[in-house]
Length: 256
Image (cartoon, rainbow, N blue to C red):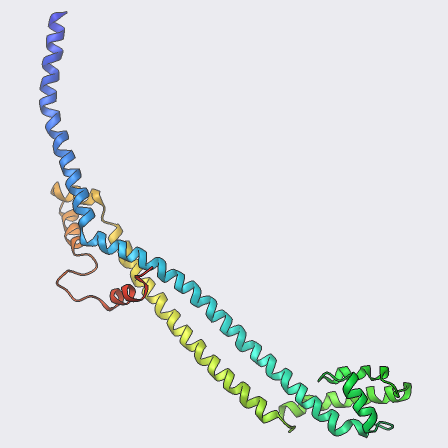
């Protein structure tokens, strides 16, 4: 029994003297790799890129929403232009031709204007409610509205009526300004997406190097050593010129 205890003790001392140095060396290697990785230029740049990319992504979302609103606004301008032109043309037709209806004079015209007309020809069909407009006159008014509506599109497209030029000039200017804002927003969004693409590519490259890569390098792995050497320079070496994409990313999107 004593012999077995002595043998076990001897074996323990033997393996301990062989194993512990290896464990100690491995631990020192791990600690060095962790410290070197933490302070490496690549790690510092990686943190900066991730933070900036988050800010950039938020700005991209905001710019997309802004662009969508501008496009909707431009489409709405066409609707508003048509609406204003219809009101101006309808008012012109009403003022210039309504009294041509048999039995309609200035007094009844004034009553219809005050009680029915809202800028659209269709509203004049309610003239039957106006005092002094009987069934026969109401029928004549509806026939006139039908004829006036057929004239309306021509007037808006090719004819003349008071206020037409002013309305078109106003909306031409608004559309031009909006179109320029859309172009600017599209260009900015394109630049941001291109910047994001470059930065993501750089992040992907930096993420390939880990603490494990440093350990392999210290153990003599040539491929890992090459990767670590490149990683230590980060996105660009300390003595090198800062790339324009990196400078733009940091200046515009690096802050919270």
